[in-house]
Image (cartoon, rainbow, N blue to C red):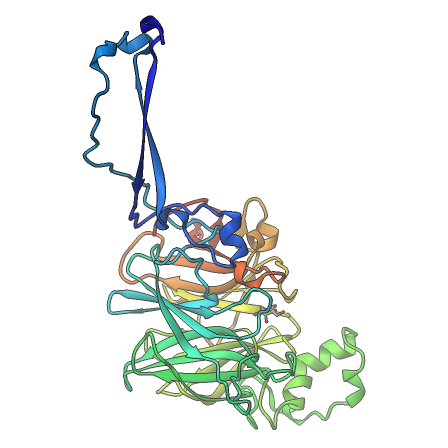
Length: 430
Ligand code: GAL
């Protein structure tokens, strides 16, 4: 090679094992087909380093200087700290997409615990149970494993293959127990059981012991049902044809409450709320998802007291999520379109017992009419005085591949009128 023409590239290929704590995830086909979204940067891999010698800027090197030893002492790799990125794969501490859908958060002793439905490749039914992840910054989550496991006993309510949805955990100061309620559907029975399930643990991460499941408040009329309505005997034909004026009137007056009175009210999508006075409430879709119930829990949070109200009969509200700010209770729900997104609804009340007032859709901007593609699941209230104190959480369902469902976490903002609203933010930090 002519001296003048020398342009030497010294290429060093070093195997570098990079231990990056916070990273952006590259999704490769290989990982996708394995069903796990593993982080390639956490696998052994090569980082090619190129050294160019000569050229216009360096000038001609002296060929007699070669061969030359080129030593690299260390390589430092930096990566931008990851904020919350709604809609994207959200890797846990092992680089695997977090599997905690329809979830909720418990805050205890400086740590956040995220509980949710474990979903698999092909089904939304419970093949594993309720999962738990922990975090101190809400961005980096450690997989704490299965908090409530499905059972292999075919006689168990929570046998593998049942439906366990929207688990929520609250801590009871009186008993020192962590109390989990969830929506349970019995295996092979579709969504007809409509039960509330209860499980309890001495530690936040579990394992939780399954206690029981059932319909709610059997034999008890809602507190807001008038004496006259309690005495009506409905014509059974009213069940045959829905959405007629007579049907609406009958549902408002308690057609389904009466139908289910003896065995208890249906309980599907649900939320739990602990008020400032430590009283807790179970909020759930009832009456074939036509009506929300707000039901008081006993002091140990493990039963219902029998006091409950109905909110928006015939309103078809699902996916309730609730928070309280300056004495006002705010509730965000969805409509009932299964896994498909729809427009969020918002309600407020001066007391948990109402009266509840409807507000316009709290979401703003592109795709707001579909809740940005998601369905509400929880509103997290951060402890102390802090920015972004209320976080709206929703699920972007992927019914064809349930494990790939995504999360929407967005800060709730407030207008000058104090009304909450939610805008999409690509990436933000709590
Ligand atoms: C949704 C509900 C989910 C799940 C799903 C089943 O409307 O919010 O929790 O039950 O329906 O289709």
